[in-house]
Image (cartoon, rainbow, N blue to C red; front, side, top):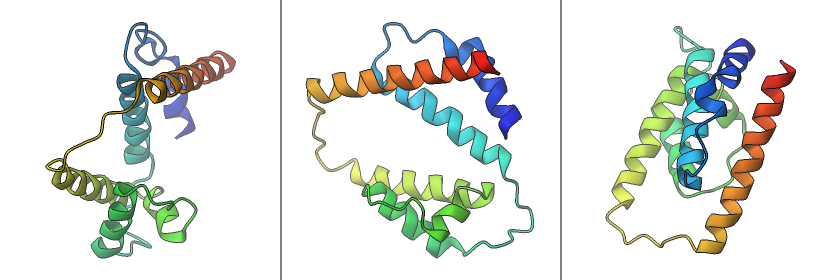
Length: 133
């Protein structure tokens, strides 16, 4: 996984092209890269330690509701098992799609600006890490 992260950090696709992009686009791009890493880095063809679809769906429901799930044993397995992580992403996406029918609140410009600055900082850190590799 470290080699894959190094390769992504070194690519111009990740390091450049963010100028003028919205915070949401930056976040989505970084999220997609990390999700792809997890999906490729932890194959588990025998599904060793997998708790099943019910546990994965429950964690997806909690994640969609923004509950704190990090650090719990089942979640640790999910993010270190590509098949479970795929199920988690699919279930969370389905849950969120069901919520789309509800009216969404727009993020305030202040929060957008803070999020943008935070993502800019993450990008700087990743570029610095890529240079050190």
